[in-house]
Length: 387
Image 1 (tube, helix red, strand yellow):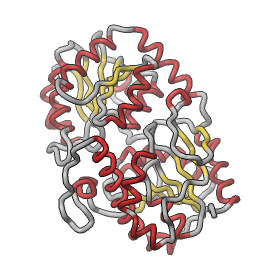
Image 2 (cartoon, helix red, strand yellow; image 1 turned 90 degrees about the horizontal axis):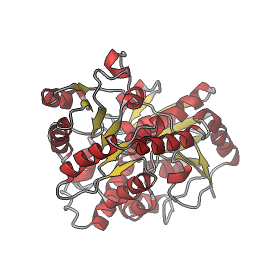
Image 3 (tube, one colour; image 1 turned 90 degrees about the vertical axis):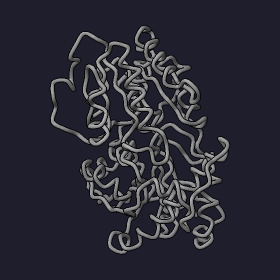
Image 4 (cartoon, helix red, strand yellow; image 1 turned 30 degrees about the vertical axis):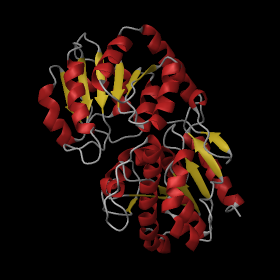
């Protein structure tokens, strides 16, 4: 059968779907993954054919309405989540139009979408084929839906829908202890398998280069040398300065241009492209932006983490991880850098955190591998689309 996987406008979304997509391809199914032009590199590096839905950067969907007017800044947490739903909707509307030529040639029997890949249910409805969701991360989907449906009202009306269709089933990467509630669709666990771009192995990647604790810092693949819609770059620089005071070996995982601009700030360590799946198990702490794939990569490696969520909706998950003792969640606000550095110092001095992280690692490793879940996709096609 033919399966279209719908990623989004960031590398992490492609990497999250890649293990299941590769498993389906290895089983003999025809697979294509769609994303933005910025995602194509991550898709093809994962060994999959890629289709670019748009060459517009993610920042344009976040900062501008469909008519080109600037989006008003959110004043409350509720407005931020509603606004996030709307820009996910704007991307979905663009992707839906762009996918038409592909589906004339590659008409899928099934569409698999990530957590917030809302083009997937729209395209599946348009083509009258089943839709399966595979979560990217452990964050809740429901809070975003009102913003998404508000933005996608024209597309929903055109398809004869009053709301977004639910998937025929959901494959959930969250370990049972951290699983959120998404909707009423049947859920099945699927093991998170780290997937990212790779590089030739260098000695420092697989073993510490000193007797100091090893800390890895990342603000994700979207960080740029200028902050276009958030403050990730400045936060990265500030964290490098703060963490360097702890007398640790510091690894900074960042895109090449960003790494080149901060490498001189690191007294001992490395900055650059770092394959987290390979390096995370060698680290004593992973300090990061609370991105879903970074969080799960640390959990899969059994590595304690210090998480810096930018909003309450992400804090819901990071607080659960902290409550289970596998790390510390640092709330946004005044003094966040100093609080993060202190949290890292605390984690380095507490061996119990490693024990808690190991328990969650074991939980993940007991979940069904993506290769075992391809049958779920085959059954979805046999059942057919939802009425």
